[in-house]
Image (tube, rainbow, N blue to C red; front, side):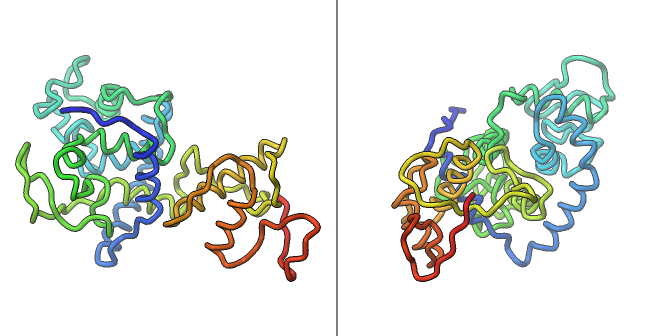
Length: 278
C-alpha cells in the first residue's frame, strides 16, 4: 500500500481533529472502562515502551486496538502468543520460540514498525503513527470517512469501515473505541502529555504575555508565546504565525477568541484590562 507523507498540512489536520474531539455521550461509560484498564496496566506498558523511547499511552492504545487488551495475544495483530503470528505480519517474532511473553511480542511489534526514541512523538506525530500502524486505506481510498481506528466513538466518526481485508462497507459501524479517542481521554485526566504540548508546571505563570514586536531573549517566554499562538490557530478563521512574538496579530486574535485584551501595549490604558507577565 502507498505511504502517506507527514506534511505540515497533515500535522495541522491531526491537531485540529484532536483538539475538537468529543466523545459520544452513549459511548462515554465504555470509554471510561477502557481507560481504567489502561491505567491499571500502565507499569507494564511503560516497561515495554520506556526502554524503546515509546510513550506508554501509545503502547496501551495499540494493545486495545490489536488485541482487545488481552495479554495472551500478540501486539502485532491479536494472534495467540502460543504460536508465531499467522495473520499479517506473518511469522513474528522471528527470534525465540513460542510460547512468547507479551513483552517479547510487544517489543518485536513496535520495533518492526520502526518506532523508537527518534520517532516524532508530538501530538500530531503520535496520531500519524497510529494511523500508519493500521494502514492508510481510509485516507487513500475512502476520504469521506475518518479512520475509525483513530476516531470511532467520537463525533468525528459515524459509519464506514473495512469489514474484511479489501472489503469496504459504507454502512458498517466500528464497535471498537478509536485509539485517538482513548488518548484524548487520557490527556483530559492528566495521565499523558505530548512532547510539544507539555502540562504547565504548578509554579508557572499564566500563558498571557506582554505585547511586544520583538522576540524575547528568554526561551521560556518564547515557548509560552508559541503555545498561545498554537492554541489560537485551533480556532476557525484564526491564522497566526507561530513565531514566538506576541505582536499585533496575536493580540488581536486573542481578543477575537476571548473578548478580552490581555496582550496589551506597555504604557497604554485599555480600560482597566490587566497585564500578566509570563
